[in-house]
Amino acid sequence: MGQTDLSEPLGRDGGWAEAEPPCTNAAFAELPVRPYDLLTVAVCRTLAALWHALGLRQAAGMLRHYLGATGTPRRVDAEALLALPAVRAAADEQLRRWREEALRRWNAGPRAPAAYPADSGWRDALITRRVSPDWWLALRCVEFRLTGTVRVAADGSIVIDYRFAVAKSWNFDRGKSECGVPFAPFARLHETGLAREFTVTGEAFGHA
Image 1 (tube, rainbow, N blue to C red):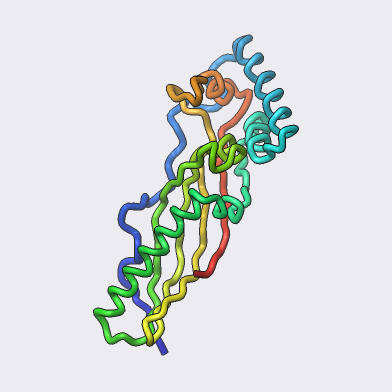
Image 2: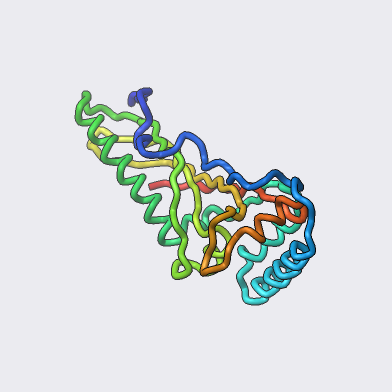
């Protein structure tokens, strides 16, 4: 039988203990509604319909959920996210680190079959327009965490079972912009109660 290493998980350094906190916009429905806020809502609804017609279903769904003002979490297809080259590369880098660290610990011990817990901590991966226009509009950046177990056999071969988790605050940060479009008018929709920020979640499992 193998032994389980109960020391510090592999790959933890450099990751965050918690997913990034929500931005520091004003609280939900804290500000009064102005006429231009209603115009912004109309623009967003038109934009969501246009994105849906163009096949940008993830982006349209996120924006509609924001306009729904429920604030409830929205689950995404984590397997589809993990299949994006930028996200897959970030995850594979963590798996590579796990393998290296596990083999280093295994070589320092009796070289018997062993299992090591692993945890990347929360990290992020940038999604660009080239990677996926739909996911770029939907998220722009994804916060993820890999947790799992790295098993080293008696001959030094390695297998990994892991969980890929997603947790991202979906909002518009005041003071930021994209393609020259400021986010402040869209942030006001949350601040006036016409829309509401929410958390994006999801999970997928893998074997490597």
